[in-house]
Image 1 (cartoon, helix red, strand yellow):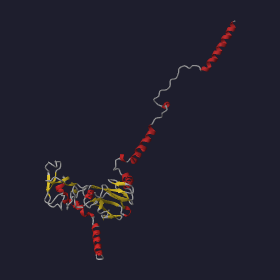
Image 2 (cartoon, one colour):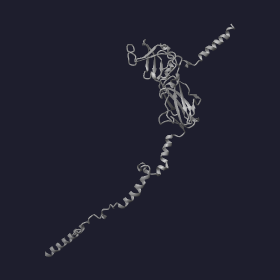
Image 3 (cartoon, rainbow, N blue to C red):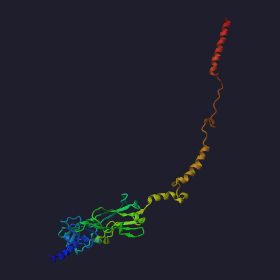
Image 4 (cartoon, rainbow, N blue to C red):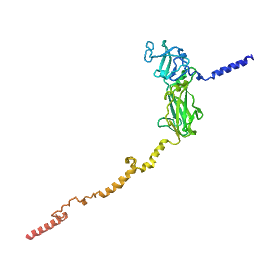
Length: 336
């Protein structure tokens, strides 16, 4: 029994070594009904029923059972097959054995999109909103159809690498201790979570993009949005402590040349021109030229008419009446 003990240990060690082998070794194997992407090379498609020297057919809109396929290809090596862009672009969908007309595999256009998120403040860095306050944590979301590679035997995900180029031109393969190489993408969208603490990194504009080169697909099909995400200079991520929108707004209102020169139309800068026209010219004119509003001093008003006869005041009439009545009574008594 002692003689078998070393042998048993060796067998167990070999078995553990086999189990520890990378599962990505079969990423080039396409199962029956599996999906291959344009640009992939070195594919083993024998499990789909395709053999070396046989023919595969693409029917497009034609009837698979009765129609004539518009495109057929002779397979030179079923264990080392290339989904060439020149041959398969525009011919995506199911491919069949021919003349057997049995489904073999699918061909699809790869698609890849990278979304950058400020995980500290929960917003997406996109378009003009590309500023991340220095010290915030950044994460990434990968939206892609290449996650379907996980359906291949022994494969759990598709490898996607995120690349970051710093303002001084250096490229990072990891940030804050987290690797960015061959991120295992098994869903879409796939989130990395907060993997980059920007506090210890230089301020400035960064270029961030993602790519997938599984089975040399990027080397053979280097198309933005397909096997890598586009990024235009100077970059798509700005890390700094000061909000660039506030900085630019303040500078536009405090630049001295714009306030002292006349290169800008007068209507664009009312604070400069309005005091000159409204205070210095219009107000004195109104004080001098406005005539008095009292009608008695108006030179155009005619004089009031003067009456030719004057009537006695109303309070004098009773006195005159009493005197007249007394005179009448004296005269009447004298005559009696």
